[in-house]
Length: 218
Image (cartoon, rainbow, N blue to C red; front, side, top):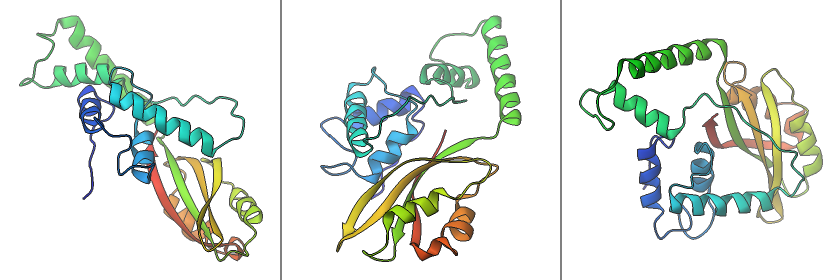
């Protein structure tokens, strides 16, 4: 049965996740799965205020770091999403039936209106971005995986940035390529990228199929 976590950028959403993780090491089962990767990608950052979430976040981070042993230079990702505390306050300001922080002053109302105007302006100026994790599968165990990755990374287009990758065994001596990419939503369609670039000539000499493992807004 599918598990649903909502509003992980808010305090209530993080509290729900923290309660779910009580007594658990992973989201599903006793080892790291795609469920952990999806939830991990949905969090803005580590949240120390929720101990179960914090411990799980560190566990996933350490395993992901081990999977990508290359030396990182450090990357910061800017986000339009507001911190959980700020979002909670804004929700309180907009909901007349739920007042967690008392009556608003005129200054607070004005500040909230200015934030909304600023957000609307930013959305018009900047296109949203997404982080996508792909599974790229070869034809068989004789496929040259180095050339397969080179062929994948040779695809260039505005709004597409390839990231970290690793080879994952799938059985019978066959390995698949798991690779991250960041896209500008208005410029790159993942479905089109797969159907018209990754699985057609000449790349389909190496690539049998591609699957989207995780898709998260940045």
